[in-house]
Amino acid sequence: MSPQPSVIQRLDRTGVPLLLARLFVGGMFAYLAIMKLTNPIDFLKLTHQYGVLPDSMPVLLNLTAIVMPWLELLSALALLLGLTTRGAALVAVALLLFFTPMLALHAWGLYTDPARHYSAFCAVKFDCGCGTGEVFICHKLTENIALLLAALIPLFSVSRRFCLDALLARRTEQPLAAAAAGTGK
Image 1 (cartoon, rainbow, N blue to C red):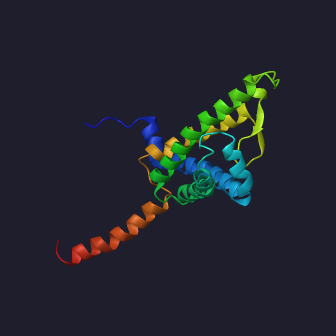
Image 2 (image 1 turned 45 degrees about the vertical axis):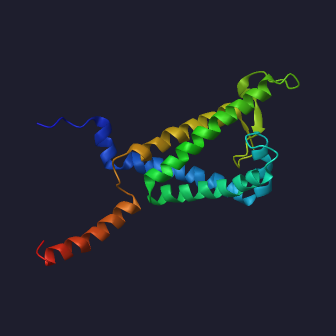
Image 3 (image 1 turned 60 degrees about the vertical axis):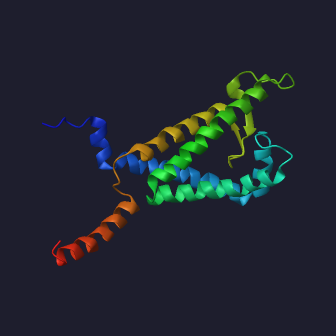
């Protein structure tokens, strides 16, 4: 006797959590990528503020500012369409795991700067380079954590309902099955 699937497993099999997560993460990543692509110079300047890449290597900073929005957009489109869903979700998770702590550290630096006066950490507001202009840090961190949690759904979901790659796989399996049946295999 096989064990009864859990509520989470039954819900996952419906494909609804996967679809909602794909649309949320893919939609946000597409929007933010397009915002960065429409103003690449500002994105480059804002990327520089984090000090992750050395000033002695401007080519690396420029390359990052060029590639990052396109990587986000490609990942977003893959999530929205349901193509290579796990790979696209992995890219989203990796980006969020990298940038969220950087945002928090930058905000902490602003908060503890004696030249600035913030009443609380959540009052820290700056342009994070995300493409949405100035944001309050607690709102942005909450948004990033929600995106991260949502991106984990397509990463670990066993369902592929409502995904284009599942539809394409079925279409290629049908002729193969017919060909195998015709040869007597």
